Length: 282
Image (tube, rainbow, N blue to C red):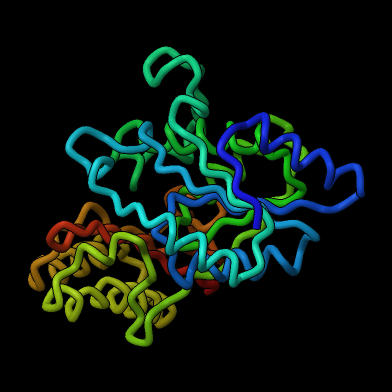
């Protein structure tokens, strides 16, 4: 597996593959990899001859007081996992390489509407940072296909809209959430959970499942359902940011007759901020 640290080195390597007519897949990550990331790499291998993985802890998507400085950085372990999974190239740029004009004076990308609410309300400017760095990585790699997990569902929709609006010649592929046997969605931030918190953490997913079943059974008072879920989470020591029923297509408020729904939740449990969702048809 090749390792490149600069955009020029990366492009030199990719140029050889393009000359050979090889299809290229991109898997962007922030490192501290787990089985969910490996599912993205495995799917990428099915879709392309070459798989590029990026590890970049992006400072512009962290807000004040968030965990940018303490975010787990485990490069050697991550690289070994990627090599075993069959990745062809690991791109690990410095902040100065991705933000040549600095963090405050550079060009930014904002994706309206779908970035609002949910994590966009709980973490102001978060999705501006996500959209900006992902657009930069797309420009660096110019892949044929890029893969993202459904766990970060709002992020997935933000990226899809950005690609559509900016006419980026790129296929976005979503990969289903990978879970622990008790339902907890895999996340790099799960490492922040204490053993006791880890036992409680699957409650977030269980509320999503129960919410889905109650809606399928005919419940339509979504506000009351959201209040119930918040009470459940708060009673178990969570601090919910949101738990909401939305239209799966655009995260709008579900209209009468909406058939494809998403329930999305985010809550802090100790140092860990857990996010999850469940998608379903009525």
